[in-house]
Length: 483
Ligand code: HEM
View 1 (spheres, rainbow, N blue to C red):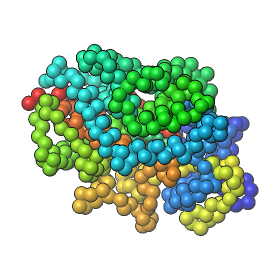
View 2: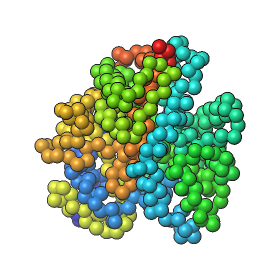
View 3: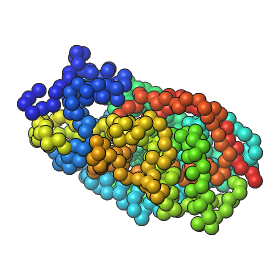
């Protein structure tokens, strides 16, 4: 530790440092170090020195230093190890990160979001109502996580990568369902190994995950993708960009689609699960959300009585549903555990909100842990409690004013990160969850088997990587409404 640098804890195990204590319960570890050292401290974790900035008022200062604090280096290293792609930053490929990023913004936001949302709505309809004749009025019992995962994965998969329309309708729908559910099994195997891959374990040590990743890539080989129709503009434009590079093999191109599949699904699946779970547990939330959906149906002159009446909401209508938005924000607040890591590209001084100067060395890693704010009782009263209207103001609109020590916070909810690397799919993700909840409540009777059971615990094994999964699934029963 040099003059001006944060206090350092290196632990007593060579290389690993404090990785074991940190991994056992990251939040408990960080809160205890905050008490010991103050709001800024450095820990050695698995061979790397991470400086944690825990005062949310200092986040803006980190985000403002975009030039000296790079997120791409760490993200690219992680991504290469996990997805096995080439180093796109190598000039021989002729592809820049800016080009890739520009496609995200152009195809996932603004006017592109309308058609993407409509496509998701159509796919959700076809997946959720597929069994409408066979299972109408019969109660089915299943795990909620299994139910949400298979529906969102299939609808999201078809929305991004399109479908092969060559076969006749019945055969096509059936083989498509089988193929996508098989892809889901591979996705789950690969995703389970993700924490180890991010920690730097080579994929050759994780043979099951490697096989699953290659099986996913196999489905996305260019000759197979060419047969698909209704491919999203995001994937179409990425194909065009990667095709423009003369040095990329077919397999590498296919692997770029695995990256997008993972980015689009890995957080959306548990986020949709938690939103649905908390909604089903809370009678007040359910009542308020049903009222909001009924009101939107009335305003848009749509009626529904059963699964034979097709309902649909546009992007603008979904954006005008703040109660559902609040349920989703609250579910994200309780389940998000992402850590934002930035790598210093030069020596510089970071001025914290308190005025304190912090010396940063080239190569240092800075970490922001939004979960510390999400569960801070000074910001959110009874932070472990689900309150469906926490993100609604007195007029029923989205609430955006939160305080700590009487001072207004800019960064009070960050499940999608912040700054230039902020999730470009966030608007689409929120819409997907709203669409799912709307269709679920319109078309299904659904309930938790045991609503009075204590809240599900979080599985911390993915801490740092985004939305946590539940430790185990929870039983539901559901049936399609038939009158
Ligand atoms: C609730 C669901 C989602 C959550 C919580 C989430 C969260 C995140 C987070 C935390 C990051 C990293 C931000 C950072 O480092 O500052 C990220 C990046 C990203 N997300 Fe999402 N995401 C979700 C859904 C989606 C969806 C549906 C898509 C696309 C269809 C998507 C596409 C991406 C992409 C492409 C990146 C990388 C951006 C870049 O490197 O420039 N995400 N997401």
